Length: 377
Ligand code: SF4
Image (tube, rainbow, N blue to C red; front, side, top):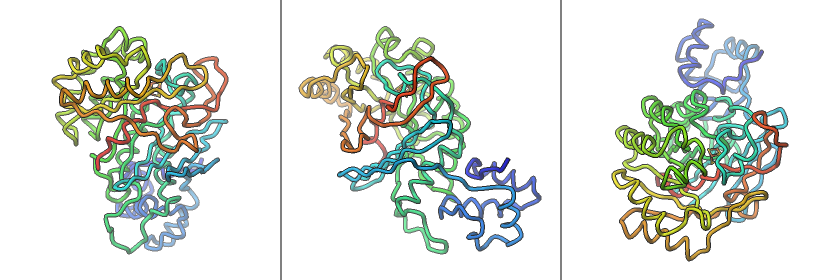
């Protein structure tokens, strides 16, 4: 089978080259061509020996995701629906802002964690994305946005995609190895050269994997909290039954010892009458009092078949006020890309559920995409 070189991080590519008797610097050259310059044709790698180019073309390929749809909203938000085979598709969303451009990346086809308010969770789980499919989203976005650098041209420091958030479809830490390889490429100076502060992984709270991430590639962390007590979180985020709040908060404190930023972002979807009361806000403050943190509040975005409701603007404001009055930063997520269904709860995709019996539905979203505003400026 032809090897897709997008599947390798720098160490993996060097090992693959070594197996073929090629020097590590050759692997670095090819890495740069693929990721910095967005090249998918070995013939264009002009500083690579012709004989090696021919050898690579015979044994390998550089294959990014195939776009099924490309839509741009009035506010500049751009969304790609990417084919990942077997009737499945995931979405990648680019959100341009004055001082940064954020790419929201998916890590799995569907999600097995079944958070009760999440449309992705309702569709079940199909499979993990490969490293090539995860990094391929950034590779593809850079090519489409015209952001790949030209060979021989210095780095001006300008990047169209300045921030990446793993908050698309799936639980990133449940696909640990492939996600970590993709993260390494995002940070690699021969690839995308993003700082650890500008790459955020969002998790529903897989405690052991949070510790592994901290040890292996401690990027910025967002935690999908959504409830201030175990009783409520058990219901909204069922993984809480395995890793309850006490363990999750302890993992957050440990993570901060190595985190690139001095706070954790907590994502909190506001569900009318469920977790949006004054008492919930105060309980949240108590729960997180010894953890430097920021909150992203996400008014629920209803989707067909969901039982929850969106709280009114006054309720959202009041909840935010209680947190802010305690000197905790709390932002309310802006809705972007409404006219192309890229707003929270509307990110489309297709999942052929292999974990449960549900039929595939063209509707997907990792509810906590919210922390977009919290990415490093
Ligand atoms: S909120 Fe995130 S972790 Fe929970 S089911 Fe949705 S995609 Fe999975």
